[in-house]
Image (tube, rainbow, N blue to C red):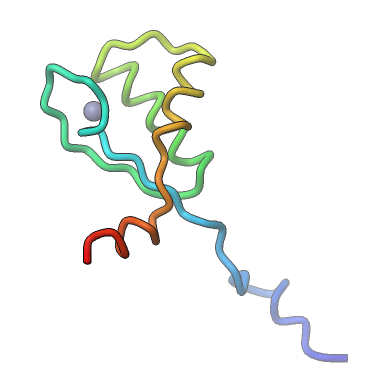
Length: 81
Ligand SMILES: [Zn+2]
């Protein structure tokens, strides 16, 4: 049996990280915040941010709207070339 190192520490693969850039939102605050992490992490924080900073109402629709604006973090790097 091979050593079971995968379950003993850090996973060998990490979930695809997503990034959301607040500049993509229509906003009067000129907010430049970017949040990156797993999709659920980004969504949780982005909804909170939209609610507390931008005054949006926290609804399932808001969460889905934010989800549609997520980008793959790796893709953003390639696009900058
Ligand atoms: Zn913002």
